[in-house]
Each structure stands twice: as structure tokens, then as C-alpha cells.
Length: 328
Image (tube, rainbow, N blue to C red; front, side, top):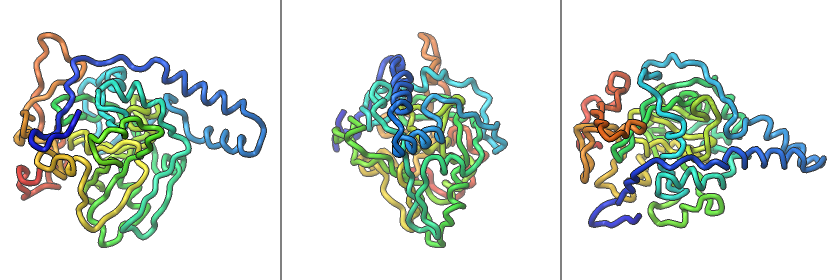
């Protein structure tokens, strides 16, 4: 995959869903067993204690059913198999199967998220503290990829607004930027020049404060798999999927609108807002319909794409009076 200035970004178009890597759960379990048996030094005991606080990947992570308006769609959920083996996480490669096959190299403990910039109380959260910042909720969201496919996924986490209120943005804060881990030793996809690294995304502050915007730690009632953005990711259901940054290590509050990774790569194709909008096509394909993963039979019909991915009644007022073709 390459970026050509005359043709725009060339997306992969895989023909089938690749089975999940069978060794992933076993490898995580073996790591934990090895750590527990490693010895009796204070350092080892401290490591074991840290491991005990944060559930390992694949462990149960229950959440109460959310009462946030629009947080639970009644559509049939995509199978866990499909949702964990067919996704984009370019830090591990550009094929849909690459994240599931390669993300076992990602080390999700210890993990720290630094919050900085235009805030009164900048903080650095370890994963355990971050997970305890608010009660876990389960929300079943539609996910729409800019490439024209979609899923329905039960996420576990809480509204991003809890974190925002904890760090107290200053009066200058207008935007929130999210920075993904960029470690060549763990992420083989970083050897590619497909994007500038680290991957960065951003929201307007009012978008980030909307109760549907989530920090996510799990899916399908379990701790988030590595290939889906472990240990913590963003989910903004009314925007195309690439707006939801994965494996977040830094959150910055800014006065000025920052450039995002996809704007840097192809500004004419990927705008800052990237709201799901069936009336605004990608320059090279229609956004009017979508292919629901799991409904790929020979006679399966594409679904009509909904404005704001079906969340118009909840978020439409955020964009009142805006030209959504200009601010795409």
C-alpha cells in the first residue's frame, strides 16, 4: 500500500475475513504463568501485584447497561470472531488480518496515559487508575468504516467526559488530541511510510464532552484484545472508524485545531470532522451504502448508510448551521 499524490490513498480491499490467531490467548496466559513463577524478589512481587490489578487481555470485564441516550442499538451484534479478525490497525500492517496475526507483540502492561496541555491539573494515569476513574458501562454501538463496511460492537468503558472533568480544561481549550503508541519494537507496521507516526486524531472539545464519546477498555464483556486497540482506545460512534484512536498514550488539550494523521496523508479525502454522512461521498467511492460484516452472502444487499451513523438525534445539534460538505 502506498500513498500517491495523484491518486490519493490506496486502500486495501480484502476479499474475506481471516480467522483469529489461535495462539494469542495462550501466549498471554503463558506470560502470566512465567511471571508468577519468576522468583521472590521485591521487583518480581511488585510486577505480580501490578498484573493482579489490571485484568489480562481476554479476562472478563463486565459493564452495566448504559442509560446514555442512543448508547444501545437493538441491531444484531457482529460476531466477536469477525470483530477481532477484520480491522484496521496500521501500526501492525495494512491488511485486515495483520492486527490479529501480529499484535501479540504489543505490551499492554505497564501502561500510562499522559494528559497535558490546556488543563488545570495535568496528570499521568496508570492503567489501573484510569480504569477506576468511572464505573464501567456496556454500550452497543454501530461502527462505520470510511471504506464502506460496518459492524455492531458491544464496547465496555465510560464517557470520555469523566476524564475531561477530572483534569479541568482551561478556558483556552478548544480541541482534544489523542496520540497512539509508536514503538517500532512492538509495532512492525511502523516500518511502513503509509502514514506519519505516531498516529494522531482529534476532536473538538464539545464533541469529546458528548456522552456518546467513550474511552474503551473492553469489548464483548472482555478486556480489549490487542488487535482492537488495547489497553485503551477512543470510540466516537457517529464518526468514521479511523477517528477512534487506538492504544492511546497521550491526550492533549489544545487551543488551536491540530492536523490529524489522515489530514496529513490526504487532506482532500479525509477532513478533520469525518462524520458519517451518506450525502458526502469519498472522492473515489460512494458513502451512501455500506456492507455489514457478517452479512456477506452471495445475495446479501448493502445497507443504506444513516446520517451520523444513526446518531443524528443525539449529535446533530453539534453541527447546526455548518456546511457539512465543506467541513467534512
